[in-house]
Picture 1 (cartoon, one colour):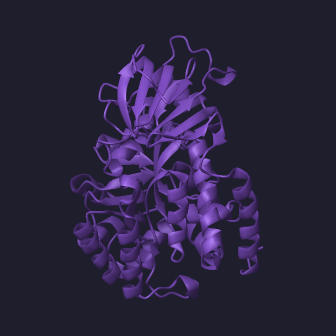
Picture 2 (picture 1 turned 180 degrees about the vertical axis):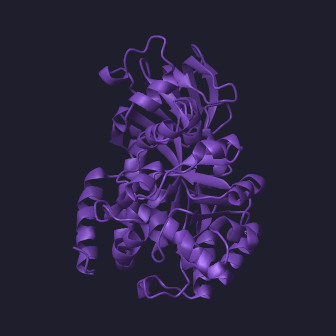
Amino acid sequence: MSKLLIKNAQIVTMNKAEEIMHGDILIENDRIAAMGPNLDSGPVDRVIDAANRTVIPGFVQTHIHLCQTLFRGKGDDLELMDWLRKRIWPLEAAHDEESLYYSAMLGIGELIASGTTTIVDMETVHHTDSAFQAIAKSGIRALSGKVMMDRKSSDIPAELQEETADSIQESVDLLEKWHGHDNGRIQYAFSPRFVISCTEQLLTEVRDLSASYNVKVHTHASENKGEIEIVQAETGMRNVVYLDHIGLANERLILAHAIWLDAEEKRILRERGVHVSHCPGSNLKLASGIAETPELLHAHVSVSLGADGAPCNNNLDMFNEMRLAALIQKPAHGPTAMDARTVFRMATIGGARAVGLADQIGSLEVGKKADLAILNLYNFHTFPSFDVDPISRIVYSATRADVETTIIDGKVVMHQGIMATVDKEIVLRESDRAIKRLLSRTSIA
């Protein structure tokens, strides 16, 4: 049994009472074994002195595209459909096994370095096994899946157009290989891209497979007005109504964005227990709109946070997403519309609920997985600390540079800024080589 003791920390638990305490955390193997002041832990393998440090649950990001990290800076200043057609789809079509691996590693390195311990990730059509290899090596907790795109269209590169049976079979093969890997740290999620790119046959098969395997479905919906118009023209229904019509709207569904919703769609989300991933940075940069997050939360819809992909953000930083999620609502709904605690809840235990792991992650409690980050808030930009809610300091003042240590499944994957599972120099070098190779295969400047 390995034992790690974190001492003298300020601990933001996010338990039911949202307690904040000072003391120690004892980790045995992958679990939190004890918490409290001056723990008598007996002999331990490692001690981390966290005096003047703040320990938080690791962030749970519920919408990420690791396959797109290499495209950072190549999709600027475009709206969604042009962004996809002119940049993202051609670049995804150019991916090879090695480029996808380093794209995933680049994203994972950034995520770990900024305190994210769990992601819901959507890959591209091909080479998804390479992304799973990167996830396995890095130690990050992930629900991931290959993107599914079986609808034929002249807008979509031939390399990304699948046959329905092939898309289903490859997804199932990946699920059977990776779902539950490393004691459940890696899970599979069926990932149809969005209604526009998927046939009804594929979506209904995904519905049945999700139920049969009891795994999540991760897709996009109602991100952009133009997208909604296309769906209405093709199906006669709005996005969420159509997903409900075919039986996909349930507690296993994670919907990215959900910006443009009518009253019926909001009712469906609430009554069916659908989870929404709010991505404010991406929504602003693509000029998609501002989600009605306060209203959804007030209606008890499950809403969590995600950064989306690097070419529409252009970072994977939960601190950025938390701050944006809070601030963008205040002009329309008033200063209390999205307070710091609400946003921090979305970034931690709210994300854990979305992925079905609220009994395992998302808060710091005895018996839960040891997924956490240690922040250094002892700095100019986060002081004074006297009589200030620590969660306010985290949401409104802290930055990703304040993350010193990240622990996932009880393993220290970064300490004092030094990565243990991702070789930074190799990943940065190979990422530049990979994007150069991909660009040579496309007409993108």
